[in-house]
Image (tube, rainbow over all chains, first blue to last red; front, side):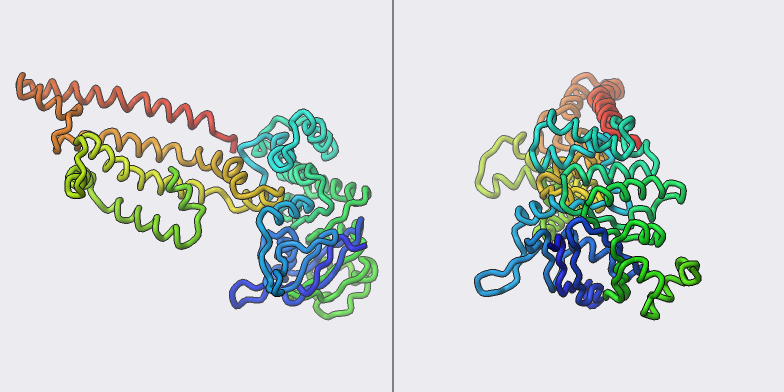
Length: 259
Length: 181
């Protein structure tokens, strides 16, 4: 059964149409990697799934429930109440390119923020869970540090732990390694790979083509606000059908064409 | 502070009103505001003590500056912070309380201190409408004793004694809220 169902998603910034009729679905436990050149709309698409962006057309369902908008009795599209949307957002964890940790809170407090302030759980109950998550991302010893004391890779792993603390059904990764030094990329990808093995449903926007092939069950290639190609990584990367993808692969990772 | 917080958060129409409020008040010299406050209540048919009249005028005046400081402090918190909080399922009020205000406070402390010091010293203007305060009292003493320089030196010391602890307090607040960057 589809965990995420995107149907005819459209979005524009003023006259600029950034998403033109995007449709795809992600099954439970599936890892979908989204590739595409800058400005292809992949990050915007991801932000729509978490309702950080409004969208003008189409529908996004998470675990069977339409997010963001509903139709009233006359069939007019209306924005759902903030309370309902916040509730839906809880089920979707998001990790950002620029980490966006809360600088005025320690690592542990960052991880506990969601369960504590949104789910209103008790601190005694959450703290062991938060520490477990930090252990999982290998940062238990940094629990009482402030984010600024951490390296980029460490901050991003805290970002992942913070999103996981809400026990989301889906995780969205928005170019999470793009702001990192090359030698720090591995530690973040390792955590994501572990999540994939545990069966987490994920959409990963990335430029790491090697990683896409390793961890992805499917790759979606976007360009100009459209899905150009969509297939299993091995097939898609070895035999790109469209000129656009061929060019993209040649530019980013020439070796894939000669392999 | 409230006005500033509201202005950072409300929609375009509300912000327009508040901007106008701030724009007008900031363009008026404090002396004019004091006189305006003093003559406004009688003109509207209310009899209030002069002290209350000028205090009201002063509070309104200072509020415009504080509002602007608070608004800019809230706006200076990066957008990514809001996105992260929303992605956790937090809503307006929670985001304001847990994420925006703690970070905005730190940014706002130095300008708020500046503004408070100015406000304290501006109270000397109320002497023009005959409200008895430090500077006015000093002038009376000067008239009686004719030791103008010494008296005003003393007045200076008193203003300093009021303002200096405030500076220390703000410095302490700032250190306390400082985040390791």
